[in-house]
Length: 412
Image 1: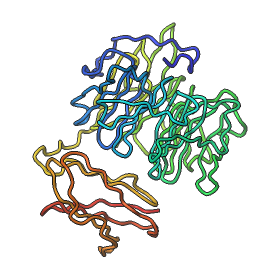
Image 2: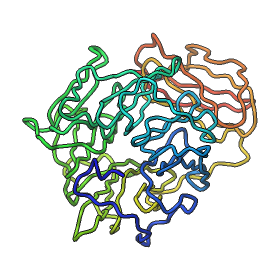
Image 3: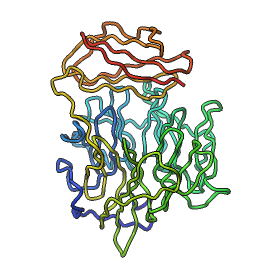
Image 4: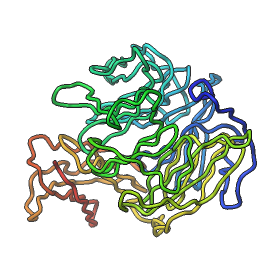
């Protein structure tokens, strides 16, 4: 599928895999082009539909395309209680019933190959192969170009798009430029990874960890310790090839796709987080006759979306399993740190009334966000308004019946 984008690589589906990997059998033996985590739920995209994984991927169910092949799914996101699938050659599809039915959502799109969705400041953005960036208007269902300062005249491909604590960054173009959106000027600023531009340098994968950014290129991995202003090689121990990045709670991961002896191969590496630049990566495993598109870590498992299917290996400590009888099954606050707005995700076993307060660091109530709000069983997404709040550390206090919960929130 991506052979047109990654010249020199031949993709061969194969059921061969190393002993340390477990295949997700609910997903067919087919190419899996993306694996993403949203609100504690996993989403995997294949050549015709989306698969939804719950309980850290222990249970998987397929979406239904209603007789229509939605195409190769490159990226998936959950936005305003709707599921969006970005496809290769098929544009965007949207589902209001969690994948049971899909409808095209391409109004305003000038190109029909989508590489990545992100949500930033309450808005949905799409990166494309060939046409740069688009922003979605959920009220009108229209997409609009979001390319101010980004030129598509030489290479408009955007391979990855990521959200930092304050803005957007992109792995885009082919001349060794790092793109960072400037909210003040509403322009995509660009910098060079090295002293001058580097024709042919393309960034396939991005990873953000606070002030540290990683860029996985088509040949090696780069690292910046100052939010992208300066970069250096971070490839000690890594093989050369297309670098795919992922972060866990304890470790960072790189999958390196290379072409060895006439076959594609994948080498998987890991390294403890927050180590000094230059620390060597350690190889976890190697797989031949396969290709890894994306990775994600959840529940201590490293999931890999590969040409031969969806696989995982246990790489980190497993956190305690949630109490299936508990009223609150999951409670998350994102983004965090945040400015302007955040979101509180509450997953309930049964319908309940909930009150939510914003508390400052001294324990003083700043505001009542919700009082006696009725929530349904399952996932509930509540907006948290942070407008006009000074930068500081706060706490969100959630009261559900006689139980109270708190989450730390940093406003910058």
